[in-house]
Length: 169
Image (cartoon, rainbow, N blue to C red; front, side, top):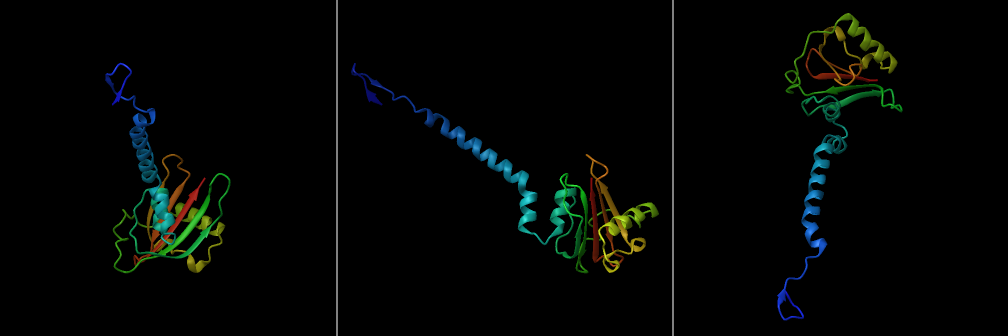
């Protein structure tokens, strides 16, 4: 409050900054919260670089049990469009829940097995790092936005080795 020339008390005009500061803080807080929520999968994979399950969660929305160790990886390399093929082998401890984490099917059809073999050949994966496809349990997924993008998971008969094959177009 300040005195005017007429002797009456008048309110001081509020500064424009004072009126907009709470709104600005609220907008900034909302933007930061939105960025953290949308970037969490990426941040998680950066914070846990050896945990390929975070990458599977990011790419495919699948939650695989943690506690695995990546023992082999091959990548066709990134291209301008982000397409390519990636292959990883994860070892799980015997008490892992990977056996029950997904709705596993029997072995893939011969056509799917042949397609996977061709992708592994293209990555030059050595024979000792390849699954025995006919003996593994299988899970597959496709990208709803582009069904050419495909994930194939093969679980060894012992349930302790997970083979992950991703192809992006």
